[in-house]
Image 1 (cartoon, helix red, strand yellow):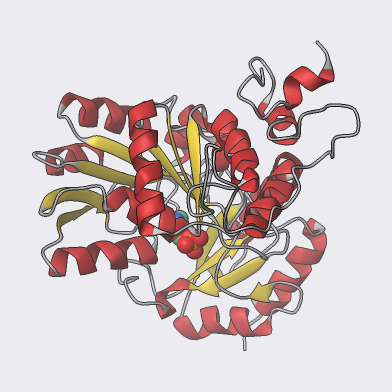
Image 2: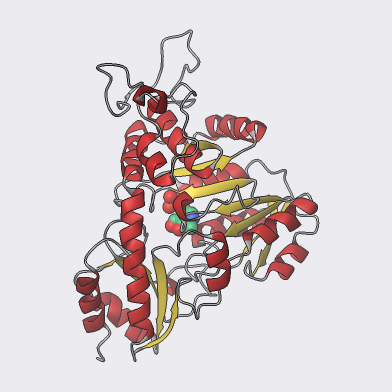
Length: 380
Ligand SMILES: Cc1ncc(COP(=O)(O)O)c(C=O)c1O
């Protein structure tokens, strides 16, 4: 097969049968014609000459198209990129009628939960918060619901939802299932294949991977849904800049290698933390003792690079965050560098144990990471 066949952005790219690690590198390239640039160039323009498919930059940009081709190929649907993960999430929620019922995890990402609680308080949506790891309770709450929002694993409790069971139950009751796949990425979990209707990403995190860009995405295999969402995006205007889209695609190229390294570091740190006398509990779906282990093993290709641990006291958790020298005390996650924070310091986190420290494991040397964590865990 000639190389040009795989590089097309005109819809003829044939990526079937390729491993996702290859797709991440191959999809969303230029034409492959002699002399064509390897990467789709950044087009800084707010308008296009009349007569083409796209007239105005709120409707489209070649850097979005390249990233969308790659994300769509990885998730198995049509991708639409947004200015941020929250831009993507709110575009989905804004499609719902006033008063529609939304079921969502009580321990969903604090921004998502904050939006939903605000929408509920204003009468825009009616929100039912559930423990998404409890399949029966979640499906019972879906009675009459327009949308079930699942996050798996959840941020920051690392709870694992039974996505195939939720998808089957939601579908039977006419409820649309949306999965926030930020923690897993399409390399570790493909919710559309498990029966979800829509996938949402904060591509700010692992997909872009370098803590230098804010970007979101929605993916669906339903062409009508994708078209409605594209209209909504143009209307709402939460569109990414071309440079942000370019950087996110550049980050995506190395996601397979970054994730492999970060995930293996996370597994090792989880094991060592689990044995540490100052640590009360480790949450990592890769640990056989973790309540989500069985489900994660069944529906994911790996357990990811996010973990959380609990210390004996809040002071001890704060001390770890203050003492680290190699790890960075910072919010957000998914970069090549390891970051950590005590999540309860944020609003909407009352379900999070006050001593829980969430760690986004990066690609540094695992022994260097462990030395730093170990010294930070020393008693005062
Ligand atoms: C799981 C999850 N979903 C969505 C978001 C929102 O993404 P963004 O910050 O790109 O708007 C975040 C951000 O932390 C997140 O962790």
